[in-house]
Length: 283
Image (cartoon, rainbow, N blue to C red; front, side, top):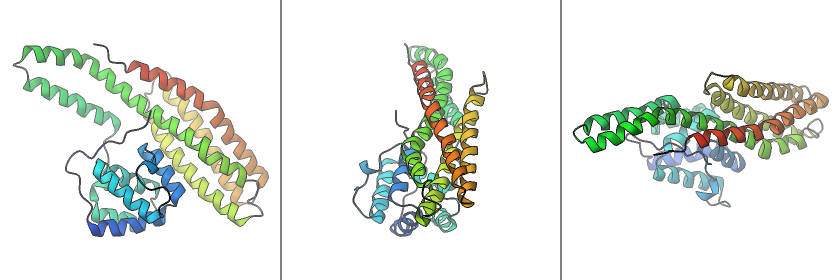
């Protein structure tokens, strides 16, 4: 199940030709081809190469991506996610503030989005109150709507956790496990490790937000936070060991990361299945 980004809903801005010129250069300087592909997959839940030419230069890929998301209505989602992933890029933030300030507005939390749906149904119910047949259908549906919205939020957060683990397991871990054997003697391997560690920290930040958004009942939230914290600790240890050229400590930190990504995905997948089953709409 892919994460579908929310479309810009109220008066989305359009990017001017000048905005395209400026943003293309700044975004291309903040990502390389691989990190852009991973970012789009993790944050928007889409395959980059379904939107852009795979062998095109990076600047062309960024242009095609901006055109695609503007056409499909989620420019705000993309630019907001880029700011979150590259908070130190002040020039990029200033450009987005100038050309697409909508991306700087804080998004409503999932609970608020769900409540907006509920409010819309209530409004519709009021407007159609003169139609008994329509009213009866809406009232009956309203009884299902509250638990449905709650389960949608839970499903979304488990999906984020699943994607974080999946990204580390398939993309980050193989590179780290390889580079950690070389970083003491190979400056390029050391630089690659530092970049991977930053990406791991971003992924963990997403996982923590998702875990903290789960219901605080029956240890649901605590269970997910436990492995997120273990992963954060292992990554912090890996970063410290790379800085001090401690290859033995770095290898130990990598083993701790491996332990998390081996133990947790199966359990998260099972929970995703359970929550998805609860979303079955029965008339």
